[in-house]
Length: 251
Image (cartoon, rainbow, N blue to C red; front, side, top):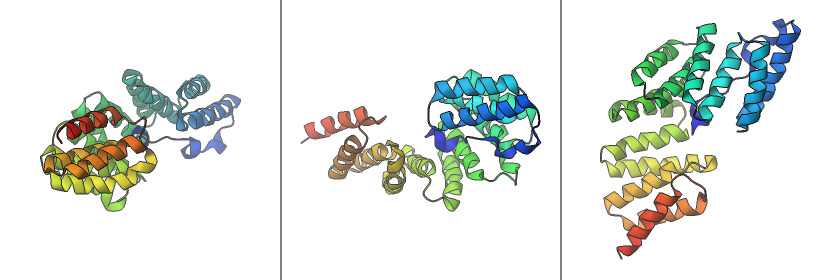
């Protein structure tokens, strides 16, 4: 899910043609190599390349952004915040880095600070992907149990990108968390079709739970069985097995 929320940046923004110095040219190469490794999920090699890029060009905000992303994906949120803050300090107009900083702050439970950063992001009318900011805002509100506000943020994303997996899933979950299981099941069933290609099993699991709460046992069982079949290493696989065992004992 994180790769749908946090944006990976390369050098395209920086006007590489103006970089005449050899160190900056070398830094560009290491940044490109590190970004490719990061995009492929090879975090140790990505970190190695990006640290080398930082040595050569320590004032490059994109290098700092991508270092922040590596640490985020490795769950080193302290280091992620450090580099993302440096990215924004180097270029206060670097909205992508600010959006990523907000995501790290959400993970750290600093919701007020995250929302402050997101307000700046959303006020930047030149930012080409505002949907990512609204997903982050939705997550911040969801984690604070402000479900109507979270739903509104996710709905904003779905207006322009109706097949967004993360927004669809958490839009459905806002209904689940307030006990509107019929709406939750309907929304989560839509999310399933968008998320399967991303191997994201969360909508399957909460759809199954919604049907369980509605008393529709056969639909619930079917969803749990699908999850186990399609996501053999999924986050919710063991929980689905436990629920299936419970449901079958109830025969």
